[in-house]
Image 1 (spheres, rainbow, N blue to C red):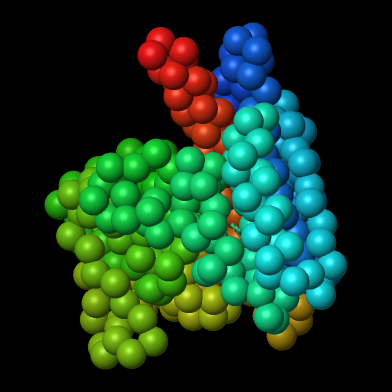
Image 2: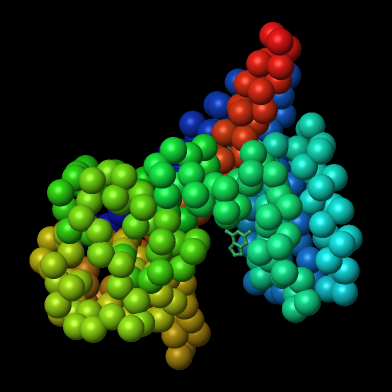
Length: 290
Ligand code: GUN
């Protein structure tokens, strides 16, 4: 029987800490502020954005939403990003993806000031993660690391297997595990003999977006299993990328879906927003001294 790692509980603890940090900043005259840009009316994006707004409210971060119609021309979106880059009261900027067809997320992202990039999606911040010298960590992989730390299992020297190679989870996740001295393997849709590899994993992280893909026979007994997936099964039930019923008896630790990685992701966004506000404060103090 595995120990269940409750992301919900870990996130609640972290949010208490973040609340204190926000108050400390406010006491010094700075209100950490997150600006979210939502273009179009994708229903899932609307839900994500509402959750972000609620989470900001919970910890005292000021939240500004910029909603633009689906037909927004790219130059108008770029103008908005540039205006927010220049706004001293805005510390973090998040461009909700996906953008409607015709708008190039990559191009808009490159306009975003890396100092306000609380998603850590800008190529500059991605590069910083690669060299292990970063201000912001991407929210989901950072949340996963927090959950691994909660188990008390040391990453150093462990076989860590990441299934999935996306730019926002799989690749940065591998870098964070490597930074903590894990022996890291990234698997993906073209990987041969997947089961042989996953069965070697002391720490297994699954981010492929395929409902209940990882079965009990793919897991090493006692492993730490972190499930990043969020899928609807045939009955419309929310399930992860891991078959929980099969894997839970084999694993040492496992995250549930829902209530695992999900609540951690927004919490890391809050953390990055506080960090961005602290960085702007430092920069401001530095320039005052000059
Ligand atoms: N769309 C779904 N999740 C995310 C996220 O974490 N950040 C952004 N910018 N867009 C998303």
